[in-house]
Length: 197
Ligand SMILES: [Zn+2]
Image 1 (cartoon, rainbow, N blue to C red):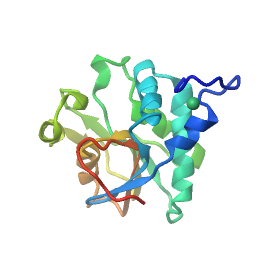
Image 2: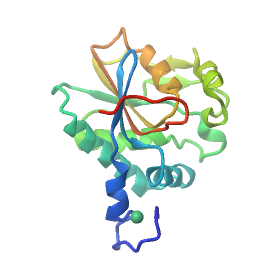
Image 3: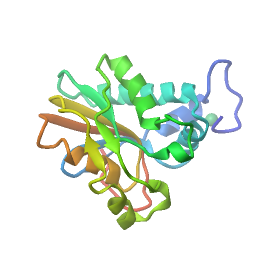
């Protein structure tokens, strides 16, 4: 699916590509956001395939990758609740398809944490069409909290580009919870550079 190499029945990615996905980094702002890999070939191909064709096996693979990542990062053992950055892709994706929610579902199932919908989004333009400044404006004050947040929260997203959506969502929680961790599948390096883990 990602490269041309033949793969075993039941597999979707060759072992060579799977190894290349892992390239962790950290974005530090008001809270820490951990990225499993970089948004470049071959991981970017996998994410595009997942988002544009709502591929359920890829959602499971990405959820598995993030769950293993979370365990490897050795966070304190707490009762975490998982949520996800809202998206407004309904115009181009299937109705109700929220990529980050699907990844978050597999992630939370594997780790035994509950998954809740914490945010609603009123953004109107797809973030991918906008530059850095416009992305921040597009999400500023547009993401709303739907319920009182739990104490220890993990927010999942697929791709972190400017961080506008993740940081807007996090800003609604930062003073209301004890622990807040962001985890994304990939970090895009089009706009800024951050330290490696
Ligand atoms: Zn491959």
